[in-house]
Length: 505
Image (cartoon, rainbow, N blue to C red):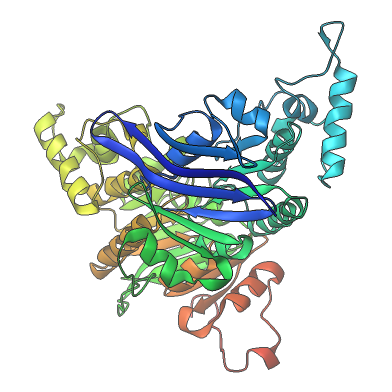
């Protein structure tokens, strides 16, 4: 098939110092899915903004179906058929599905919005693509996966021919991701060109036809998906070999440090251990961490170094006992986005720098700079608003907060979600650092390879209950997924050489 869009020699600068795109060539074919990858700051966002007309390129040739065009505004890009679906979904939650799909493009009758026609138009789009969603439903009643489909339907209602997806699975569970992938394959079969931006490499290999990788504003690698592999992609992204993508250090566990006894969840964790928690969406993974951090009431008990920690009395009690929580949504519940890095870093450990009633800015800045240096946070100063940082650097700031408080029980909920490959490895290395010192990490992740790569043992939840704990060395992705989906092990004939460890063994 022909190419929908072809860009050659695209350059974009911001002032004299920052050259975001340096002569990039990029094409989007009909009926293909392109995985567009690169570390944060590589130029992906700038390229997408150039394609959508938000930030027209300074120089370069742009062609649509081999005809020269100028993408000078979002309206001109949309008129051609270029639509963007952002990571932060652009929906109005208090309007209906139909109203959202037709928003800004409503059918009218006598200059008045024709609500019946709005409903009918939305229903036609949803039915045409097999989206089982009621057009009359309110968006705020839908789950994350259905909202994602509404956003896609909104683009299709505008006759999208090129669909740009930014981290489309960041809030989806495993089954929802599989459903989304089927939707994208159906759209590809209808001739759409799809650009898929994600930090999740397994997903990119599963859904894409071609890889395009940017680094420092340049296109450094392009290959058909069938002709490449993870090591080549990672090397192209970070500019160096990553011999061990999951660099879990071999650490001999010490005595029991943490004893957890919650309803349906009983587990002892030893000094220096990383315990992974696996489970489908709704299995209780995040709720377990929130309970251990004192955010939810519980009749259970938490013991750290032999001392009982009251649960449900508030996070300050758990923080004082050495517990730190990195939440799954750093922007909503992990950071004060408008405040500087300095405040976000020292927020939970002011007693470390201000033992008296006054906060001294000297120690405050010094403590923050220590974490910036240790975690390689890319920022011009401690006073930079944390909202200005990339996703990976924002996550490092949250991690720096708990390193500053000297937390010894670290609860990590999706710590590498929306984080580039280089930052992921840096976060993994910090996990190694803290466990070498005897701290423990409880890691919740939707990525089975991450759990297998970084956990010493994996605790699996099914319908809110802990059903097994398996040694990393004794399992496989298939076995973990089987436990997650059924609450049972694979048939003994299939796992005779893979003994599993029961909870608390």
